[in-house]
Image (cartoon, rainbow, N blue to C red; front, side, top):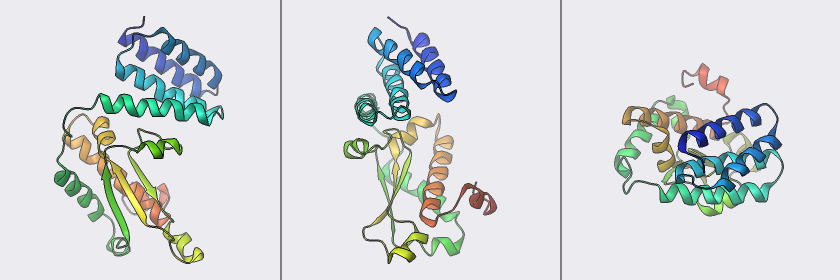
Length: 203
């Protein structure tokens, strides 16, 4: 049986193995941790989340989805009863982030819906989306719309509130995480790179 500190150490070591190109070793280490049992739900979720990434690296898409679906369920079960921010407050923070964009860009966002959800849906995870993703752009970016004759389905930026709240220790850090996520997902729509964001003072 592994305690919280043991589990954290093992997950950290598995991450280092993955980063150094030793995905098979990371997989073995994480599977041994999970088989051992006795983990707290959040430790199990962290281990399975990393195992999903390892399996993705190894080309095992089915295994990745299996682990990430479990992560989604474990994270949801561990949620506090209420979100840290009310829906209206969360939306106001996102709107302030959008207001930072240059006016010329804001004027072109009229057809882009910005939605808020707790976390990626089970269907998205089955499609390979990380259950701990902070934000998601779906649709066709503006540069590609001109060559493809417009967007055939809605262009949407979704912010995942529970995941964003989990990443932040306090409200100030949460506001910054929302800001970063909104700007980066909006950048996907405009086809902007990280260098472009830096040049605009939004990096």
